[in-house]
Length: 163
Image (cartoon, rainbow, N blue to C red; front, side, top):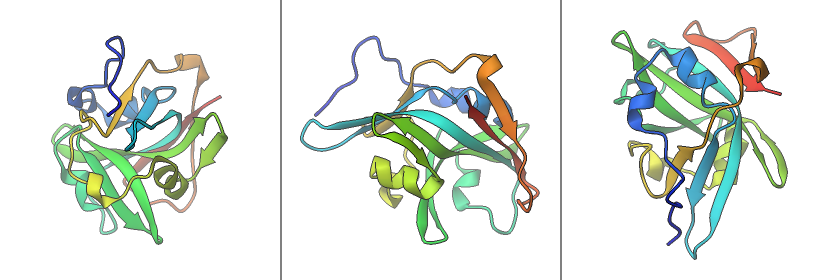
């Protein structure tokens, strides 16, 4: 089983107890790590995220999980990965939309879960766990950008990425 090195601190659940847009932005540039069997590990940089706050009819159930809980749900036939958050008592979450790995850019939430070999068995687990975690430092604020998209639900607070 692959273990974290002693200097590699995983992001604590408490990180997600802040305004969801701030949590989303400060995930940019951090490393997501997925331990696989046979001492194999996938590491990738978080390149794009989306912030969600408040319940809509189409919202996934994990939106209301405790902050720092992994949520995995199916949309458009693909698994989507996120981490629940909470701000001012409102349910919120950040979904991972793109990664950068040694093999290039993984663009799209369904491709992210496929690249990381993540399915609904992760749903409901804390982000502080041995199979999947986030570590490292964010990119500098001058590299963070927000993208506005048309035709998104009202509870989408924005898409954030870095260059």
